[in-house]
Each structure stands twice: as structure tokens, then as C-alpha cells.
Amino acid sequence: MDFVCPNCHKRFATDPGAEQIACASCGKPMARTQQVSQILETWYWPRRWYRDVPKPSLNFLLEMLWTADGQGEKLFTAVAPPNVNYQSFVHQVTRAIMKGVDAGWAQLEVPEDPFADNPIYKLSYLDSEKFADAVTALFPNVDWDETITVEEPLAEEVKG
Ligand SMILES: [Zn+2]
Image (spheres, rainbow, N blue to C red):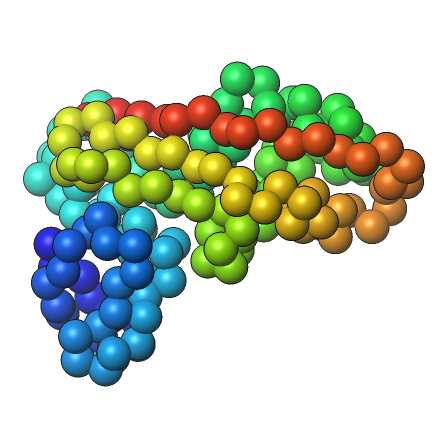
């Protein structure tokens, strides 16, 4: 598919499933979050007129992935950050995971056919200690006596 380089804004074609994409013009490697965002846009393009197909976003996809099966509530209860509501908690953790995807401690797998009707994305924590550290850093007012445990997220479908 065609990607647009966030650095030099030139268009280039490459395999969307590649582990690491680099711009054909300037050579700059593309961040994983950029790669998946552009794949989601390309997926959405032919479906943009369907009223029942919401535009997918990377942020929402990651949120769905890590909070699935009650994991969001479970982590919220375990961390119990003072004066932070669940929604704000989810928002902050999602942003931390987004950074983790680019930093490499979280892995967001591109589906085999990312342009199928309902492509399934998978998120895994390659380094759950780093995930715990990232969550700890978000909420400095928490008394971190107990170690938080992180369970592997499930796969999520982008609905077409
Ligand atoms: Zn470039």
C-alpha cells in the first residue's frame, strides 16, 4: 500500500505488514503507531460512505485491546489512583501504551490481511515490567506497595 512519510511528506509504496517501514525517499524509519494509523486510514477509505462504519483510530483500537475482558477495570482497581476517574485512567494508560508501541515494549501486530472486512489486531506486552513502570510513572500519588500484575490483552477486531 501507499504510505506518506511523516518526515518528508513523500508517498511511497511498501508492504503494510513489514516489521519496520522506512521512507523510500528520505530513508527515515516510520514509527509503528504511524504505520498502523495509516493502515487504518487506508482500510477506512473505501468504507467512508457507510454510515454504520465508524472511522477507526489507533487510540481507540489500543484502548479496546488493553481494556478488553475487564482488564481495564482490573488494573484501575489495582492501581486505585486518587482523584482519577476510570475514563481519565484509561486515557492516560492508552497513551502510555502508544508510546510503548513505538519504544518497543508493547507490540501491535498488523493482521495478515489488514484490508479485510474485519481485520484482527493483537497487542502484546513484550516487557510487562516496562508496562508496569509506565503505569507507575503516570500516577505518582499512588502508594506502590503492591506490585501490579499485567495480563496479556486479547485480540480485537476492527468492524467493517
Ligand atoms: Zn521521507
